[in-house]
Image (cartoon, rainbow, N blue to C red; front, side, top):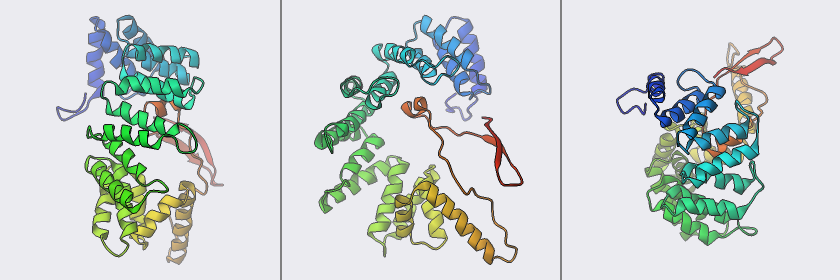
Length: 335
């Protein structure tokens, strides 16, 4: 199922999980539930996912409590019940399941499903960090910045970030790099920040590659453009939409430094609508006067807390009609 044999076939994986579950393998119920929850094996059913999670829990698989808790948190296939959600996630976390401990830490940090409680957020993150987990150390760094006013415990955050980064964790490298670019930092700090940023990019962080390319372009507007473009292309090839936008703007006449500054300072919705205006203006100069349809107004979707807590990125395929007055009608998610 992980593609190590050259091809991912989650439908075939589901068939084997069904057989394993029928033969009493409890963890197979967890895997089946996950495939049914996200529909990646071809069919989605929250009800069936819940049933499999409950069977996995009954069979001694505490990790399934996290997935069951997520269903209760969002009301997917069950009534929305934050109390039941927290209870289930705590069972997984108490059993030592690190992803559940991190989710619980985040829930207490931002007040999702529970009252905000910084002490509990730190306590759960510390359990993860105690296992030398770079994710736990990164989380403690984030929490340290929340403490006090107005800046939090800056030095403590940097120390946790460095522990995470020293395990060759790209996200930790990116986080510690950011501390050297905060307001009030010196030119020497910026030099150290660049070094961490480059390490994060070299370790595969597309976000770090985007910032690195942009900062190189901004600090060397008359040179090093090839290096800046190379890092921006690296980020774009790995799905960093902002890097693609910078390169597109540069392709249409802006300098890389100006394109990067534009993307960093102008809100996304304003930039998107501006692209429509520019396309329309170009079409007016074209003999046939045609241009691709683009939206006049964008409304950002609400990202479900459960997906945000579990760091889940998803693609949504939406079907809709555009009527003769340019209004969107009958929009609904089909996948």
